[in-house]
Amino acid sequence: MIRPDDSLLNASQLATVRRHADLLLRDASAIERFPTPIDDLMAAAKLTIVDDEVLNENFLRQFMKMAKSGIATIKSALSKVLGLYESHDRLVVIDKDAPKPRHPFIKLHEAGHGTLPHQNKVYRFIHDCEKTLDAEITDLFEREANVFASEVLFQGEVFAKEAQDLSFGIKTPMALARKFGASNYATFRRYAITNPYACCVVVLEPSVYNLDGGFTCDVRRVVMSKSFEAIYDGKIFGTAVTDSHPLGPSVPINRKRMTSEREVVLIDRNRDERVCMVEAFNTTHQILVLIRDIGRRSRSGIVLPG
Image (cartoon, rainbow, N blue to C red; front, side):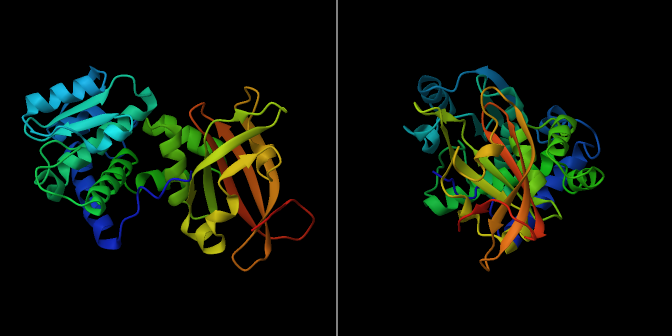
């Protein structure tokens, strides 16, 4: 199932998050230091990190008991908990089994809960609150924390400036992930949404192979630059990519990690055909398909139905 946008904020909300992210970056003297100094940022936020615990149900119950939150369940118990924040002792706990490349983003996500004043005043234990919050407010807080983490990890406008100095292509976000100390997943998303080109990243779940030798990859998320979204409706990619899907030949399979550029033709919002270049990278946790719009179709190619 395609997941909803987990970083969508209005202009006012985005401005608030960016202001506090910039303050933290400056307090930690982190701007243009590479990789982004997570430990210094957490120290500047006056947060203590615990990263040697497994956040299973038993630990969460004990933690809430110690925190005297008086809460029997937590919102995120419906899925795997990777991190949590407790405001009284300003404690951030990271699940030790969480993939290492994701640790920086998880830490900064929890730091967002502890840094944004309108959140920190409400929450005692971040996965629940002492005041009654409806689902929309809770989801907003999570989106704000995601944006905060991205703004801090990629140092505001610094990431876009670094990206502009490099040629467009799949190896650029891979290189920037190493430079900023971020996961490929987070970096590819940032690369798409801050890019001046009409481009997008289609995030696929790992391939599931069929008995007939084919494969299926569910579409997890489509992340588009503003200019790409103006041209295309992200729904054209459907909910899954198979070997017979026009994007199928670009999916790395059989232990292949990357595929080189391949031409594909997409149908835009006006029902016109446009040429795009596609390449992909398999991180093992997901497959990242990078697509860049080239322009109106001038010769034969593969047509992706709208």
